[in-house]
Length: 466
Image 1 (tube, rainbow, N blue to C red):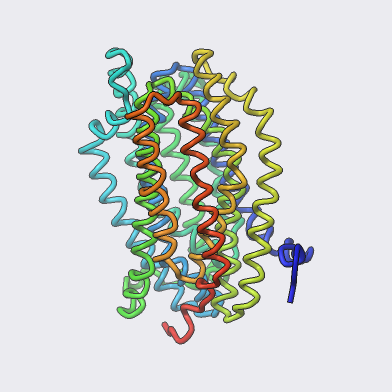
Image 2: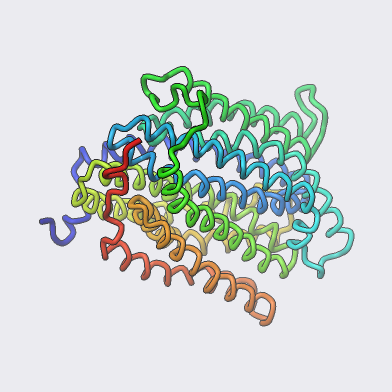
């Protein structure tokens, strides 16, 4: 039995296997976030109001994106373990479940955004700002959101397909899809935002069109590849021959998946509520958080995708009934994720002083953005740890526990803390941001004991036949 620091250190072969799965996902999301960053910078060149309007609209899109992730995650838990069990029929049924879930979420969110977009966006605009600025920001946000509704379709179906492709070990394909979308997005961004390359000057509207087209290209690459490579993705063959899913399996997916769906929806909604709490301090804070968030998202990619890789690796071990090996792998991968993220913190600190200068906005907003980046850079290893804990718990089907792990912390600790401090105290925004950010330490402690307890170490597809 491994003891001491050796418990957390793997062999070269172990890391090579883990990185073979993680690196394509990291690169894919790094590319996606890099393009989003360039898109954000281009919109930022138009002015503060367009940048703030797009940022607020993206808070709503963020809730949809994360909810889609939660919607396919319940089926992904079973899909990963079915893949480890080499049961392609079982995996096919989970694939169908994901397609149906994507369709349902598109219908719900598109309706909400279309009919309630204006009042939802208004919640993020402080009444203390000048009426002209508020009206301008709302108009830009609504213009952007209405076009982005179309982008819900390729994103949701692309995620359903990508989750299956990844669990089959083909993590390079979604990365190729993202790379294919890069050129399209950058050319259209430059052309449509500023009226270059013979294209009309559409500003914020152009940024939305470019994003929707890029998402469509990305999704099509993965979907077309899947249906032309049945030898690698066997579960996709005859996928649409029917939409049948065995009742017993569907019920199990729902039981495991509903807590994940609710968790991701409520967590992302909670993050948006916290953003709204910050926004009561003015549109300067909204603009600064947008700049900082764009930078942080680029660095967050490593630990977020490392968590997804942990879920795939540990889930496959559990499905193959290699329970003790799954436990050992989880410890090593969690430690590795935190260690690398700590190194990224050191890189982020000097970047924090340079990146905000790329935006055409006021000096005070750039200074506040630098501060936000520095605070979040220090918090990065902490986020890495709790993210890994989440995926470890999820890999064993403990979705009820992951629901409590994320939901309770967000809604019982973070939201009340942010709401009270923002609305009922005169605490300056700098200290307010630090207090709310580092309340995550509570989640670190809870995550440590949950993972250590081993309650997640179980094979949920043993005896489950398609």
